[in-house]
Amino acid sequence: MPLITSKYRAPSWLKGRHMQTIVPALFRRVIGVEVQRERISTPDGDFLDVDWGRKGHKRLAILSHGYEGSSRQPYILGMTKALNESGWDTLGWNYRGCSGEINNKVRFYHADSSDDLAWLIDLALNTCHYRQIVLIGFSLGGSMTLKYLGENHGHLPVEITHAATFSVPGDLYSCVEELSATPFQKGVYHQRFLLSVKSKLAKKITQFPDLLGHLDLGKIHSIEDFDNQFTAPLCGFKNARDYYKKCSCAQYIPEIRIPTLIVNAQNDPLLHPNSHPMQECRRNKRVFLEMTGDGGHVGFVHTDLHHNHWTDMRAIEFLETG
Image (cartoon, rainbow, N blue to C red; front, top):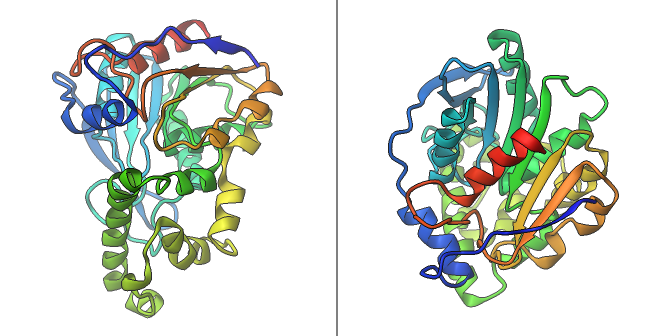
């Protein structure tokens, strides 16, 4: 494992793991980025809404957002702008149900949606003829990216050369637990995610009353409850714990065969220390683990809140030289 000593330091005006997480998420504004929305029909009768940052380049970066995020998150738009300015086209995709419109199928996305990522990669290769593709993922999107790379190591398209991931939950169960580790975390992070997924589930119950009418939203009090009652049974898992175990990305890291960067902050309020894939990375010389002291969860502000964040510059540096 090439363990990288990180040079990142949070700016002096942004103190603490919660501030470093919440302030960029709520207040960052990315100006001057241009994307074009396209709805793509999937083979199973559903759709994915994607945002293209097309600049006529021969290199493509595919960007995967975090849990209950979208391709319009500031960290996706900021990365899009930085990549476009550095000679890359971009494809920011929305997981099923994340683009602002509920999807067609009974299930929406989950941690095993790396199959949709694989399908998008094939689509880009077959229709756009890019010479090089790199993958960039944040939080759950980073987990999906690592899972895809590990489980497809024997037949990865040769055009895929690098990957960079940030704030990655290596172990899903420990991170679900960490969301409620303190009253503040439970009240701010866990509650926000829970309200969001329950809102989507309410729409699904209306959309598919025969299949989901038995579900009682009033009995779902946690993310694990949600995954026990909805995600696991619909997606072929025994229960939430079985889902977390089989979809956690750490187990796939030893099989990755391309240069891959994982950046996690030690003060990340959403990642339990057990979720940092130290042992798995030690078994793979192609995976570079960079542990920063600061950064929060998908924060990593450089000096200015609204312009290039450190993640933008770090990803491009790694993709060009890693």
